[in-house]
Image (cartoon, rainbow, N blue to C red):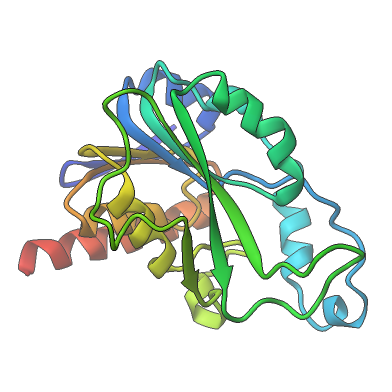
Length: 228
């Protein structure tokens, strides 16, 4: 296990299921874990783009163990998921937190493919909380739908499923508390949003390449905050 400290922030290279229980309680866990979905199909569109091959290579289509969501370790949780995961994930969260809400990232530029399903023009995320950790923000901030364009090109930082800054900035603003953990950090989008918002961030990522990107992005965010 490797640990990188960036000011008060900590980034861990290793397995989230082993590391997260050792980190203690956080105000919120904000995560984009591997989705569970069919990774075949896509026709001509898929042949022209290699994102799905990267998803398969990095096993980002095999789902995740719900036990990583632990109400004893966080006051609130934000978890992205595929539509097909909601049926099993919602009962698990509802049984562990006081109140869950299904929110949605509405994409301005969805991929032009349906693959015998609805087009991926929106991705759900669940925000659930225990008593005292209800969402923060005024009336103009507490919307269940955030509209933003999907990351393209260099904005993806070499990751197939990166979430755009506009989405993560909004989510972090709606999370109450000062400490945020992302057990599936990827390239550090949650960390960048948390650092910019003045929160203390802890991230975990098992892929060394994405971890290095997260370290660079979070370092830049921290340095930018210090010089502001």
